[in-house]
Length: 445
Image 1 (cartoon, helix red, strand yellow):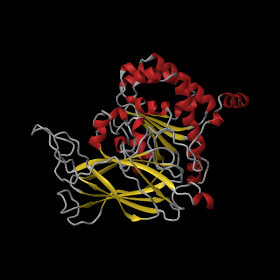
Image 2 (cartoon, rainbow, N blue to C red):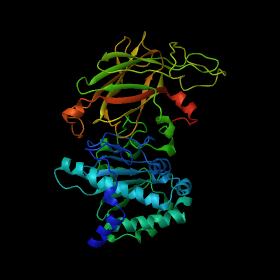
Image 3 (cartoon, one colour):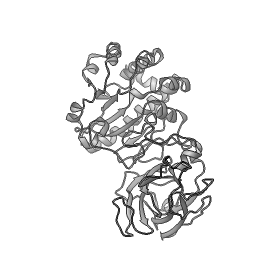
Image 4 (cartoon, rainbow, N blue to C red):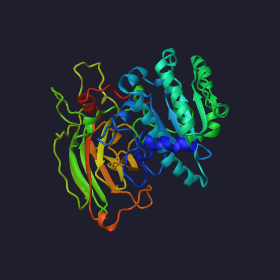
């Protein structure tokens, strides 16, 4: 058995798979929340991201490694009921899907388990899995190609990655799932079956017995929202809770700057206003960036129109609403870094005049839009949603290199630390991006 396992790893080149760890800059294979060896991340269509990752993120319902249970085991959540089997098997080969699955298992083994072991002070080599079946249809449970692949995948996992399961919860399981479950049980050994818990619709009591409420998303009965990340706890393109920007959206970012270890803090300010009234809709909501603090960097600004009018753009119909006919609007920050150990970002908003009727301060004090958060733009592009008041003001972006106690990436040597980290970024109103790439609206709670 052991010899067969080693031969498989050698022939399949499993040890050659590039896995994101604290001491490298490889991207994570899937969304992740609540760990230190990598920053919280989504799958964003940068050049580092493989096509199979984008397809799985788009068609496989929506999933995420999301924090830990009460015993320190990592939690993996997958919204299986929203899998688009038709598009998945039309665009992905079985070989691609299995290779992606093995990469996920290796990431779990080499990186996720390692941190969980350090935090727990004991060996952690099993995970908690939550399969959300909400949305499961009879067409899915009778899909022959999917059933055959599931059987093969379970067989391979029991041989190649045995004992990786601590508990599995199948939640929001409709009656039709029981038909599938009778079949799946015949493929599993009794020990694995004993670890699987089938829970009915909105029955989350057992989840909360094993997982702290603050580590469980609200849609599973917990209190966590991960509001600092687009898509929240579990980004799900099928539910349109995250913008699905194409790869070309990250090929050209309008602005450039740099941060260095000698002068690690830089601040840039943008004039922001809701869309100005315009017949052709050509005005931009975001003005040109201005250096307002920091030092030691350079700036090359181009490609944006300045608009200082605080009047929101209205549609031709007086009864039709636009996304900016509300107290808030959404701005996106896209950015990358050529190297480094992570960048900490903070975003503030400062009113030009009196505050809007929105609970914000009635003076010109800065309002926190996005709290200081360590992100990993050196691994893959970062995309942030920023919720700002629907009125004219300044958007202030504070950038800095991560401190020695933030994250787990090693510090550079003296020679490497002398080379500034190059950042490229763009800031756009949501409406601009939706129009530019012909995308559907984002549906948020």
